[in-house]
Image (cartoon, rainbow, N blue to C red):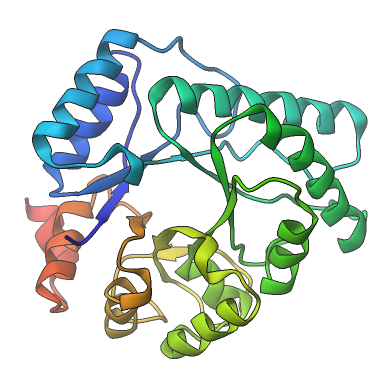
Length: 290
């Protein structure tokens, strides 16, 4: 079974159950969500009854909770040496890991961080030290997302990802690949098998726990991080299909983070297009009409 889904909402009234129902409405077999707004610290108490209802409905629907992904908020920056911001990021990420455990979700995607002018070496060391403080406190696996290289982002190259992982003393660490970010960082997604070979040669292939499937509004190496709908960007439909159906990543959750078409979510139609393996040039018009 193809493990394909999208980012979905997590609202106060329905929480995990609402996230699941939204995902099912798109024809998804997996999904990803934030447990609160990604830009702030506001977090609603988790409702155990809704969580249990969601878990039961997942079983009925054939969705494995082990395939579900939570995304950590953007405000966490483990690379920053500022004592208050650094300690806040560690504390808040520990809380997010606890929320993962309460929800029964075991994978948390994290942007590694930005060194904010401190330099790559300092930033990477800060991330390593923070993760070595966080990881022994949780059963959650933290997946480091590959980044586009905007500003002073870290995790842009495979070497940076490997440096972090090699410095971590715990096994609950992994990788989330993002196709838009990889392309924007300079990796050729038309040669994805070569990319996987590089990943394997670094001993990182088995650590991939999630893939964000996004086209890119910008050409390879642009370092812009602007997602585009599947097949409408510089990566292209055929290349993304080859990535989604790559045998080496068969059991990995593929998550769409593509932009809304005006105010409409595209995921039902993109998932259908992916399953059919046939690009629909009129997709955006179809979404707006329906």
